[in-house]
Amino acid sequence: MTTIHIDRTSRWFGNVVAVNDITMQIAPGVTGLLGPNGAGKSTLIHMMGGFLAPSNGSVTLDSTPIWRNEQAYRQIGLVPEREGMYDFLTGYEFVLANAQLHQLPDPPAAARAALATVEMEYAQERKISTYSKGMRQRVKMASALVHEPSVLLLDEPFNGMDPRQRMQLMELLRRMGDEGRTVLFSSHILEEVEQLASHIEVVVAGRHAASGDFRKIRRLMTDRPHRYLVRSSDDRRLAAALIADASTAGIELDWSEQALRIQAIDFTRFTELLPRVAREAGITLYAVSPSDESLESVFSYLVAA
Ligand SMILES: Nc1ncnc2c1ncn2[C@@H]1O[C@H](COP(=O)(O)OP(=O)(O)OP(=O)(O)O)[C@@H](O)[C@H]1O
Image (tube, rainbow, N blue to C red; front, top):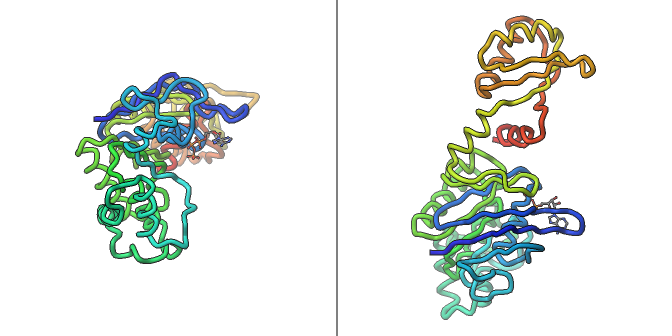
């Protein structure tokens, strides 16, 4: 059993703080790392994989630091997000090279086994340049699995996959989690995480925003009061119609903005209510935007789904 501990860890690049004082643990099973673009997910994953040193704090695997620790590297497999691969190699040669780098006792057998795990034997003799995005993803995965790591880190693994490939990969990750491996994958899409991980970690703008059971966090995201700025063809009439519904907690006419500031309690109900009320009253909606920053990121998850 292997657990990664991230303890008061920060990472900066010049004056950009990509990861800001984050503490979290990644335990065996499948964990989803959720956050909007630029939240710091890749930077965190690279530190967990030993690709990057923390600027501050520590990242350890069962109490030993990961950075520059060969023993830790033997236990970790990392599937990076980047697309660039050795296109002139065949899938087999690519995975074999990694098996050799790990100095495994029988690199060809390990490469074949890893390619079988991701169901890529049929195309293993083809050049990577001829692969689709999903096939590339699977070969990267085979390469990360070739030394049978107990920790598997995947950066946006579902990007560009079709629904069938997505399902296959989800099944594989689920199986690995059930086997007791520590599997962490990042995503900026709420629904993707929902299907695979019951435990999630949320990062927003370099900070740790939430941790725990997916359903609880989702409720937190969707059931908290939300503030919107709404512009319409008749703000006063729209305000009167909305306030009658229990999902609206408060409305203010903002003269300087020429808009309504609305506070909604029940997110789902409000997002159904607003267009319906406007339609029934013959009011045109010109703009509906979340008016606080944290909500904007929550909103982007929902929109991206
Ligand atoms: N090597 C680097 N040099 C400078 N800035 C960097 C570097 N790597 C990351 N950053 C910055 O750190 C922040 C976090 O980036 P990171 O790639 O970790 O986020 P992310 O959540 O993985 O986003 P995405 O989903 O878009 O990949 C961003 O502002 C990014 O521009």
